[in-house]
Length: 115
Length: 113
Image (cartoon, rainbow over all chains, first blue to last red; front, side):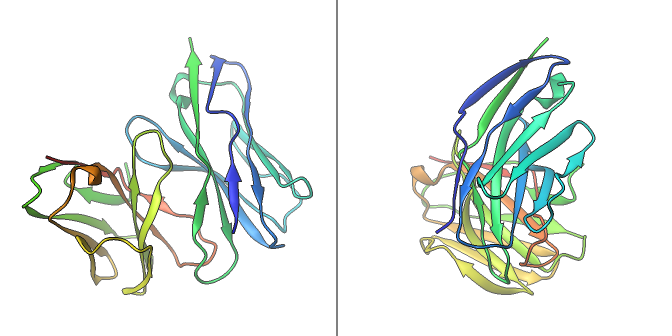
């Protein structure tokens, strides 16, 4: 079974600085999808960024980018120019390719942004 | 604003009550999901509907009964719940069950007394 590990329960960053959240996963599949979701106190799970495993190029969405290392099964999230609104729980998630693959979540990293 | 709407936002119910959680999306998505999330934990999958048919039931107790009346609506009927069922219940939808990302609602905070 696939597993997703986030080794940092909590992280903090100064406003305007850069922070990297770690995520590793275990799978025997060659094609799959990886996601980072953000859950602020408002409770909604918001998709931050996604990466297809067959793409070598790292995904980027404005201030958010990933470092996808397929061989190492690593998928870290870099947040540049951190803003107070970035404070949230961040969940890394894995989904295999297929018609009925479930989304597997890591345990989450709580990010605090200090003014 | 969320494209997946959940009602109510908060619900307090006794163990003998019957209540329902509602979820609605108008993105044309054909897969809809119920998740349960305890504090400081990741969401746990409960049910998945694909094209209005129940596709996955993660061995959820029968006191939780899902219903998908049409492609835009998903309900979760609750009956004889236990205090440990208190949690945030999240609804999500996706274009299909393949690789499309899930879009989540704001959730219903359920407290069972």
